[in-house]
Length: 210
Image (cartoon, rainbow, N blue to C red; front, side):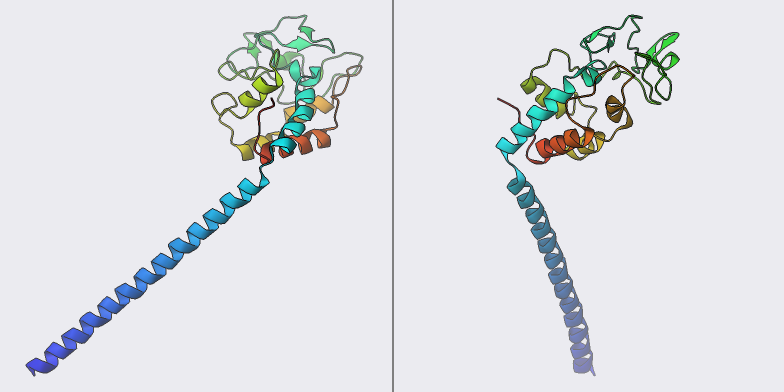
């Protein structure tokens, strides 16, 4: 009887050990598969990096960002710019903490949800505002190299990742640049051309121009 009990207990223990061993194999296989997937993903990103394509694309992006339709709402001061010559806004509204104006002089007082009819009347958009005071995102006066570095710096771009920057190309206020007030010039590229160049720059390494 004692011998039989000993054999049974040994068999039970062996089954437990066998179960643990099989479980360990499954865990190891799962980790290996995860590592393979991660490595594959990293390799894909590395293969897509192309400094020449990236820099050439940003040259196109830069032309759009320095155009009055973009530049005017990204001044180095706290007063927006205005017109095709990017002069200081005639009413001198100030940025304010949230970028929507200060005190009673709010952007939305004049900039309605849609463009106001008439030559050189205020353009409109439901989200009309400057960048906020703690993240001014200045374009005015920036060289191509300076602006490229700023756009991918999370401490200066609103903590946006590359994926979020790509999505930002379709932001309603970005797209408003292609719907200017009557009499104002359009950016040098169509929105599609700009977006294609923007994505090419970012996906190929977001290289800084020389």
